[in-house]
Length: 455
Image (cartoon, rainbow, N blue to C red; front, side, top):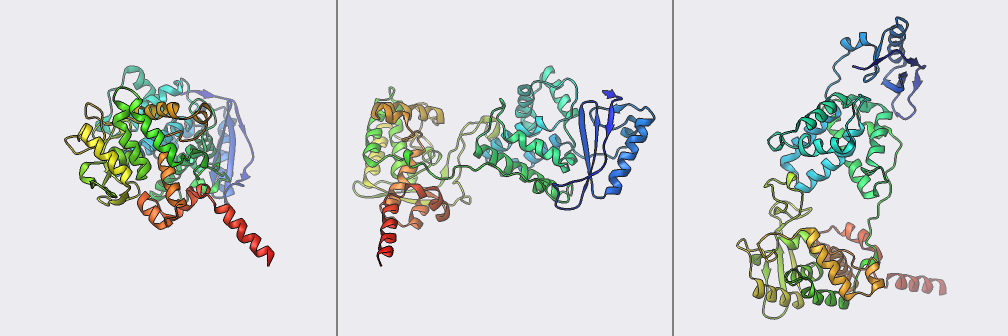
């Protein structure tokens, strides 16, 4: 225990950030400012009176808790620490969440847990804290690895320093949490989408605390803080036209010895059928109707997203999962044009299928990592696009093929309900995301306004 005799106590003040009446007791122990919120002013004044009496008696104050030594033994149990509650939150949701969701939740907690700690001496480096959290604390007990001696010391520090969950009733602590999710691990400004995802996880965790009667209301609701606006619409500069798509697909066999050729049909599925990359990765022969001529059909059953091995059930980087935003065993039917039928038939003739029926896999039967197929895509872009185009956002990612597909369907006059059905979107999301990719809309609207003005 680290103690000090340097104590300063201020008057009680009204908590302006709280909608319900509450009062804040404020004091400082050493260089650490402390505060505690009470429902009534009398309770706050009584608490500060106890602190003043202890200071007048010459008692030492504990730096970690801000309390005089005499009050430590009498202090009421503060309940779980934030780290303990976060750990139980992750573990309790493990069975019902997808690997990518587990990874996203852990990523948010890697920012929050190291930030919500007391000023306890001997703080390890942040990367040491995150390593112990990632490989031990935020995993089910059966999946935790053996800690080295140094890691065990890091864990003991975390267990000692992690703030009580109840401290998040203080506006100051909540703002510390919001500051933490707004920064990258190296201290830079985090992307808007990242901040919003992490804030949603913090909100959900605190809602669970409300459900368990730790808090009367969610402390986040008392804070005047707005997440940054995130880009939710597709940049039309990323959308390629059909001729460019055909050129890029034709260039695939020129990339590598066999990798580009093996991936050509997968990229074609993303463009011609509007599949997500993880949906194309799990496409099987039984899902495809491929006639010798005319239109065919794909009936999607599963997706094969990629996640770090520590978050998957099997310990592999790829696992078959139900379709995004769909119930288990729900399927999605997608008519596919003759051009894609031909490409798929050629792919099957050349490479066959895996024992489980998958069409797209490495020469050894594994799944392509996102980095592997992204590399092939970038190589094809460099072969087809001009230097200026290659430096632009045009088809910068394989996923932009899907954006090009849906934009093409909408501009061709396919009803939004049908496009949404094929893409696995809601109509509302479709209109919002692809609003800027509807060619000719501005001209038509301007024409209607001109006609009205001429009347």
